[in-house]
Image (tube, rainbow, N blue to C red; front, side):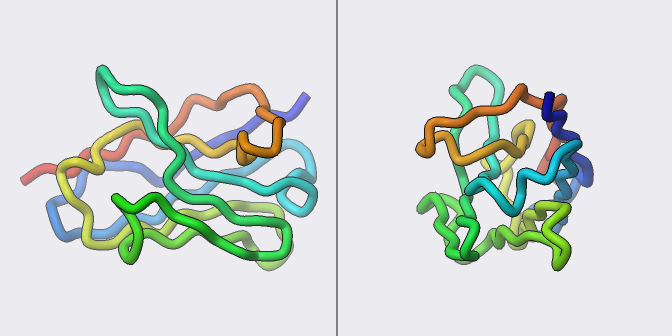
Length: 117
């Protein structure tokens, strides 16, 4: 069974940056389109960035121009570079397959991102 482990979150001031990482127990990053999701308190989990197996990326309007999704060269890791962070980016961030492909792996524990002065 695939296990996903997210890391790299933390407390950052508005305008700051963080880089999130995702590791998986299986070689899924080269097989599936992947995505980063986030869930803020009291809100539904939302898909914020996706990357296809071919490397094409897509972003939610709320993060476009500020976030960058990528895979490691060996396709064994998934990253989310977050720049110009805003308080509204505060959420628990998760990685998983792009759900629009009909596949969802068991959710990891996520990594907390808090943007606050």
